[in-house]
Amino acid sequence: MFERPNEGKSACVISINFGDNDFEESVEEIKELVLSADMNIVSTVNIKRSAPDPKYFLGSGKAEEVKFIIQESKADTVIFNHNLSPSQERNLEKYFSTRIFDRTALILLIFAKRAKSHEGKLQVELAQLDHLSTRLIKGWSHLERQKGGIGVRGGPGEKQLELDRRMLKLRIKQLKEKLDKLKRQRTMQRKKRSRSNVLNISIVGYTNAGKSTLFNQLTHANALAMNQLFATLDTTSRKLFIQEGVECVISDTVGFIKALPTTLIEAFKSTLEESREADLLLHVVNMANPNHSEQIIAVNKILEEIKAASIPQILVLNQIDRLDIKANHEKDEYGRISTIQLSAKTGEGIELLKEAILQLYVAKHSAETEIFEENPLN
Image (cartoon, rainbow, N blue to C red):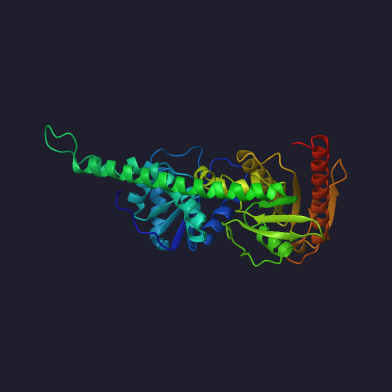
C-alpha cells in the first residue's frame, strides 16, 4: 500500500457543518471518541460548507488553512468527524503529511484497542479488513503505474496488488468461518437456555449510558465500567437473581452510537444476536445527557437493523443521581412497568426494575404454560 504516515497521539479534530441540526452534539461526540482512542486533542477546526469537496472534502482553500493549524499545533494525526472516500483520505494524507482517520477508522481503532475476548478480536479484525478492502485499489495506485515493457502483460506492481487482494480475501474467509463456528456454539447455548424456563435479558443502549454499571448492580459482577465510549465490547452474561424459582440470564452488550459503521454491525452480528434472541431488552439511557432523546432514536434504529425491534423493551432512564430526582416508573396499557427512572450507580430504583422483570417472567411463563396445555404433544 502507499506509504502512510505513522499514527500519532496528538490530534487535530475537524468537523464540517453541512447544515446538520445535531452538529454541536456530533462535535462533542467525536472529541469523546478521540479521547477514547487514547489521543490528545491539540487543535479543533469547525467549518461550514454546503457540500463535501470531491478532492479534499473540506475544500482546497480550507485545506491550506488547516495545514497551517496542524503545523502550529504540532498535530501528528488528523481526525475527521465524517467518513471519507479512499481518494480523499489519500489526498489529505499526502497534503497534510499526517495520518488521517475518518469516523469509521477511528471507531475501528477504538474497537481494536478494547477487544479482549477471542471472538471480539476476530470480529474487529474482520471489520478492519472489510474496511481496508474498499481502499486497496486506490491505495495501490502508485504500483499500478509500474507497467512492464512492450508485450509484457503485467508488471510487478500489478502482481503485488493481486497477491494482496487474494491474501485479504483468504483472511476474510478464514475469519468468517471461525466466527460462524462460534456463532453455532452460541446458538446451541441459547437453545439450551430457551428449552428451560429461563428469561434471557440483554442490556442495550447508547455507548457510555451506564449499561455495565447497571449490569454490575444487578448481578454483583465486576464488569469493566468506565466513563468513556465503548468501554465494553465483549458480551458478558451472568445469572440474575430475582426470587426463588425465577431463572434469568442477563447479558451486557456492546454500546451503540449514531451512524455505527456498517462493517462493525456486520462483524459483530454474532454478538448483537444476543440482543436479537433475547426475551427482554433493557434499553439504558443516560437521562442526564441533554441529547438523550436523539440517542434513544439512534439505538432503536440499530435494533431495527439487527431485527430486534419487536422484542419487549423496558426503557431504563439512568443517572437520576446527577439530576437530583427520585426513582419512578410508568406502566403500559397492560399495567406492566415499561419505563423506570433509576440510578445504576447508587442502586436507587433497582427494586422497581426487578419487579418489572418479574412481571415479564410471569407473563412469559404463563403464556408458555397455556400453549403447552393446548398442544401437549408439541
